[in-house]
Image (tube, rainbow, N blue to C red; front, top):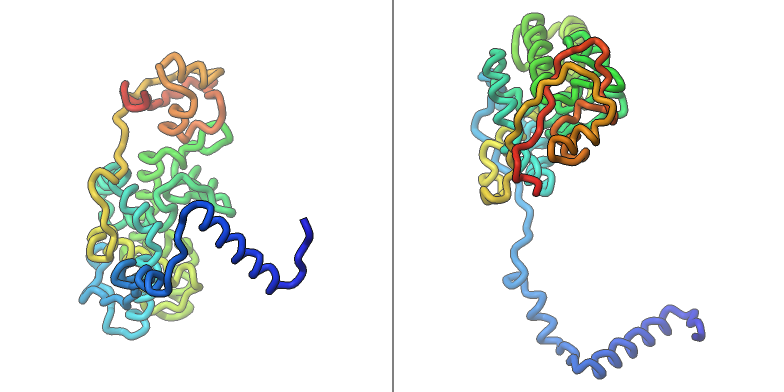
Amino acid sequence: MKKILLGAGIVVVLLLAVSAVQQNSGLQELTPMETTELKDPSRVGDYSVYALDLPKSLDFAGEPVPLHNPDIKERADREFLVNTYWQSNGIMLVKKSKKYFPIIEAILAEEGIPDDFKYLAVIESGLDNVKSPAGASGFWQIMTATGKELDLEVNSNVDERYHLEKATRAACKYLKDSKERMGTWTLAAAAYNAGNAGINRELERQQATSYYDLLLGQETGRYVFRILALKEILKNPESFGFNIEPEHYYYQVPTKKILVDYEIDDLAAFAKANSINYKILKIHNPWLRENKLNNKSGKLYEIEIPENGYYD
């Protein structure tokens, strides 16, 4: 085939080719009127984008947000806009919240931590067992040293930062300590991001007592506002345009717990002996980081096995 070097020539050849295909296939070329009708906005839907009305009042863990302050109002508005118009992420978070919030809510209540902190887990990890470039891991994004300080087992074989229940209780310990030091739950939330020492240092340096009066780096400066935005969106998704039917939600698969106080040389074989495969075993026990369980000390572990019938 001869190469055509001129751009106009290419267009002509393409148009001729399209015309030939239409004639050969019986397709009729659209008239100008038909093309206009296809582009009628009333037929394809209104895709306008709108500014949002902020809620009249906001609070975190019962502590009011000073929305009358123009700086605070603008920062809140930013996070509502960003998270409302990130539609795919919003829908995923609503779906996953139905699966994981019941577990987190029960533990927060038992530990005496305000329910609003479940939204902290949302902005930390998107309710997923992710690992940050800095090494923070799990739903609560706990660093290795911090995890060990909070009595989690963290090594290459077992990493309880990926164990949702245990990691949630560890996060509760950290938050209780932060609240004791800082005095408010809002500052405790900020300290979860920047560290207790970091927030205390800024409070002293800036002679402030409130998170909303601090000048902080972008990540910590946006941190609580992101929690506030996701709290409102996940509480009332329909109000922000997220329309999800109950059948679209994700749910926990019921499991039974097998107590193990011995070594397991081959987790694939262990899974098969329990009528599941290796992948399903790891989905329900992400804290098992290798293909075996080293347990020379005889520690008692609980391995979750899904009830029959869910993965058939």
